[in-house]
Image 1 (cartoon, rainbow, N blue to C red):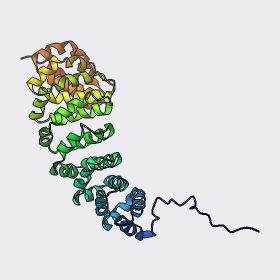
Image 2 (image 1 turned 135 degrees about the horizontal axis):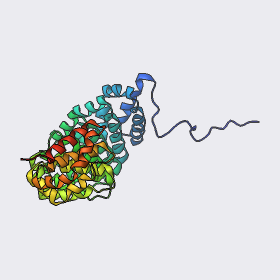
Image 3 (image 1 turned 180 degrees about the vertical axis):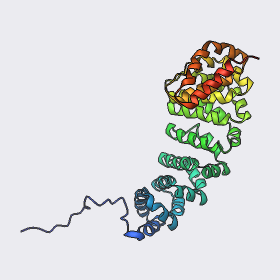
Image 4 (image 1 turned 90 degrees about the horizontal axis):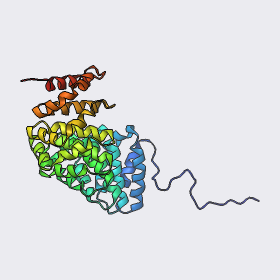
Length: 341
């Protein structure tokens, strides 16, 4: 005769680490109640796991914002439990991937609370908070909000101590913020930090540091700071880097610094001209454009113009380049090099 035994484990299809979602429009209110549960840690943890999956569907974002989910996540960023902190930051990152979510994060003052996690002992909490802030910074209202909170100095200081993958996120955040304001970055001595990162072993970090040097070199103060710190010899060295993205961004930074006369002569002294000429036939069109623009800047100096006359035929060939912007800058370079007083 068969026995009727009740198993002591859950069926395979039930995940005990997640809160079961309520049916229909009751799902979000229930999740929100459980996120606000102050007595049971497991309830908050399970709700966060379910919410993180739930938010990946863009159709759920609006209802979550209306129900006050961002505000509940903001509170959980200060939770004593490391899992709650990093998972709530992850939920906010998923929210930040949506336009309505980004707006809610800025309007509800969540960026400032996220910045507290920059000093968290949990690596995942720091990483997720930087991912959320970086995503928000990609849009004007987000980068303006970060600048208004005066977080640039904090971000620059974090570049000295953080893990490499988090440094990449910070460099991206600073890139977007410096398009809004460069004064805070200059005051925080960001040029010194970016220059030191040009020696980093990671190719992505070297490239992004060179790109950020370009952003910071737009104002005259940034150009002068680069000259004082002898940033140009390091950038010229990167023109021979094996990674094309690094070479491209190094040429871009040289172009910005070489606008001033002292910048031109420091580039010439560092041997930038032969390296730039060797890059004009690169497969990457952006690389060809950046090299030609840098050559045009340097050719305004008589010494550089004299040297470049030997390579003018190579540059003339690029006037027929299939990419219009490459052809345009090749023509400009030829006219500057062959100019006679």
